[in-house]
Image 1 (cartoon, one colour):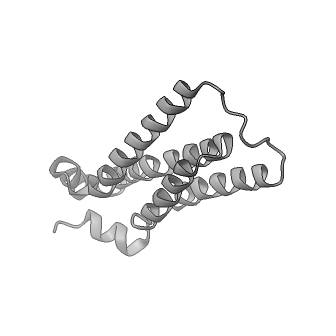
Image 2: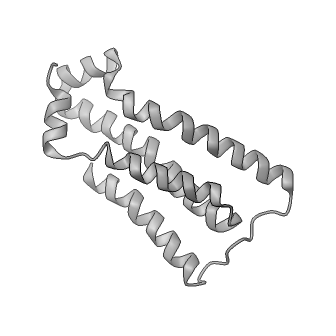
Image 3: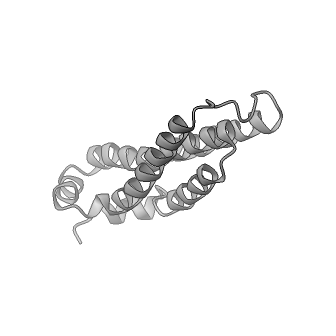
Length: 133
């Protein structure tokens, strides 16, 4: 799971590096204001919805029972889902930031990066999450 955790961050950093070194062209998103508005609105809703969902995911009774009963298999499954809930929007917001140069995407990417730190898949955290509290 640590590989997934670091891969999302690495892809976001790679995108930033490629755009900052002019390998990819910045700001080449559509000129259609409606498309930009819809895209920004969807990403804001996704970010606002996925952050608390991902942070609360292991507290849901069904998922917690699954984690306690099936331990390693369930932890891998739900851990990957939780990391993807935060990591994929992080990468998408980073890409959209450079494609539009709109600071809102950059701020959302930073917030998602900080939230990823709260679900870091360390050994002690994983052991605590599969124990019956």
